[in-house]
Image 1: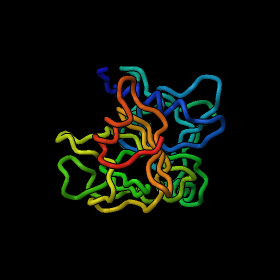
Image 2 (image 1 turned 90 degrees about the vertical axis):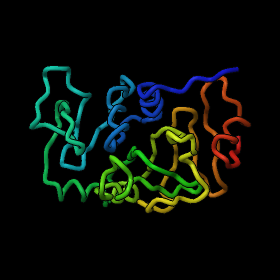
Image 3 (image 1 turned 180 degrees about the vertical axis):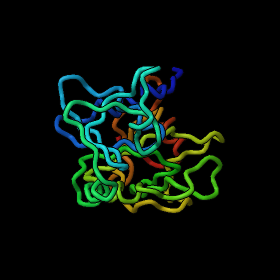
Image 4 (image 1 turned 90 degrees about the horizontal axis):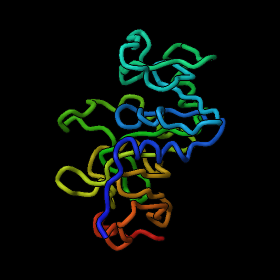
Length: 213
């Protein structure tokens, strides 16, 4: 049976589905920002941005952007009632002090043990410094990664050992990809779910590592 990859919106919705009521969440630069548009109705998720915002809403409608109100990736955002602005240092205090329940980050690679590599000085188009990702990855109670499973060359981004510079060691709890959702455990990778039509054996072949059911 053929399988179809999750679109970026479908992947964002899959990540959002696991958010819990009352969570304080940071959405990293790039693909993770789309999660804000798919948060489950009826529960309160408080979105944090490292440049000093708490209480962000979904992306603004086309034509109503306010470029004085941006997230850490310089994208225009909205602010929900009760939202707040504060100093950059206070924002990093929240990140480093363990006050965020979840951060969702992009990545170049994640190891089976949860090591994270999401920056590089040599990758075309890459952010040329680690930025706040290191503080988020270690400071948040849970670090989730959202990315395509394979590179453009068809190589798995989930690896036995990262060969990009590490952002954090053993910090990733879950990996959300366009083909499957995986959990990082001390024993290795565990399958949470996969797209329809993708067998366990096919997924293991794509990743090149054993994945427990």
